[in-house]
Amino acid sequence: MNCLMSAWHAYEAELRGWLRHRMGNAVDAEDLLQDVFLKAMRQGERFCEVSNSRAWLYEVARNALADRLRLARNTVELPEDLRAETEVPATVDSLAACLPRVLSELSADDREAITLCDLEGLSQEEFARRKGLSLSGAKSRVQRARKRLREQLTQACQVRLDESGQVSDFVPRPPLA
Image 1 (cartoon, one colour):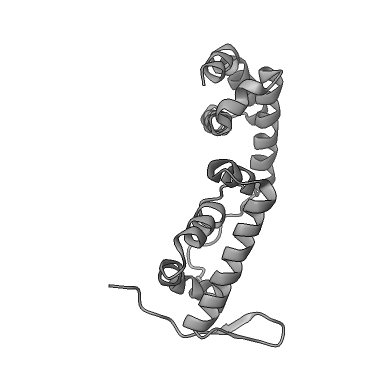
Image 2 (cartoon, one colour; image 1 turned 135 degrees about the vertical axis):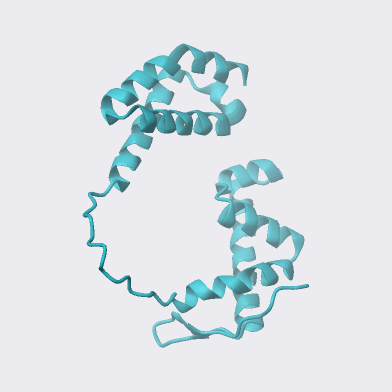
């Protein structure tokens, strides 16, 4: 981590200026700069293996900026008297209510794989590293856990699919007390 901190101190001001120039907004630039720092921190000791830390930081900043700009949408002010339509959530979105209980019924290994990779967004590569598994072994573990979760959801929540394979109905299960 020492190599990260020294690289960060060396290039932080330069990155800040570059982001401010491109974003035109100091507050948004600071937010993006913090995102870049967090991504660098998530690399852990692997950051020390980067041959050109300045180039790596700029690449991450450029990608983060591109993602932010891609997500930015022009908005149109709507009239105050416009009624909002009440959206009925898709059946599959409501099925998420069954997830905590069904997850608790899975084995600890399956629950951990799904929680880390699917709910917390950990890459399967990082999961493999943390668990001391090969990448293919980690991918297999996650796929098997997803299959068992799908089977448990289907059985426990009585999921019914329509002709296109989409969730059409289910029976909600109350959370465990």
